[in-house]
Image (tube, rainbow, N blue to C red; front, top):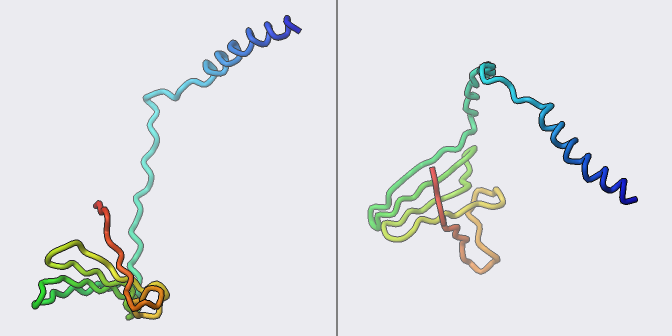
Amino acid sequence: MKRSLVWTALLIPAFALQAQTDTAPPAASEEAPLPPKVELAPQPEDAPVVSIRRDESTGDVVEEYRQNGRIYMVKVTPQRGPSYSLIDTNGDGKLDKSDGEGVRPVYWTIYEWD
C-alpha cells in the first residue's frame, strides 16, 4: 500500500512535466491570415426615428424615439437637473403609468459611457 502511494507521488509530477513539454507553442514567424472585411448591413426601413425639440419656455430638450410611427421612448433633458426617460413598456404607443397611481415611470440614467 505504501509502495503504491510512493510510486503515485513520484509519477504524477513526471507525467505533468511530460505533458507540458509535448505541447510546443507555434513559431513566432507563423502569422495568421487576416479575415475578410465585414460589410455593414443595409439599414432597415423601419429603423428608429429620433426627433429632438427644445421647449423655449423652460429650456428643456425633449427627444422622442419612434419606430414604425409609434413612440416607444421619450428622453427629457431639463435645463437644470439630470435627464430622465419615459418608456412605453407594452408597445401600445403611449407612455405607461405605473401601477395605476397616475405616476409615470421615470428611468434615471445613473452612468453612461461612449
